[in-house]
Image (cartoon, rainbow, N blue to C red; front, top):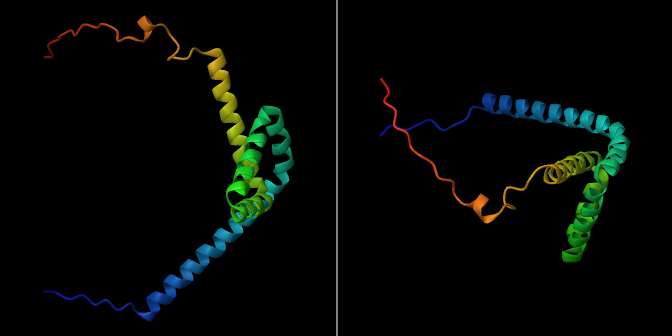
Length: 134
């Protein structure tokens, strides 16, 4: 049986740790820059969410209330995360508002495929046509 040398050289370990540290520092600065950009866009997002679908705020408030009712520590944690990360939260609420608005408008303008008569919902007859391929 062939045995492998499982020792990791100290030089390789140092290189890997330096690369990991550089990656984490870079990721920190990218997220910090993204946070500051989103911080300036947040008031515009908050107002636009109100105009698009204010019910997304109400739904988030109810969800947060349920977190407090089930477990106080979880509710406090989510509240603090909501305060610190409110620009990210506003983007999530904007996505939810746009998605719900799209679903509501498609239901209003289009036809629900499951709301037809019994004949429309049954399988349709079809005929198989055999064609010879040369």
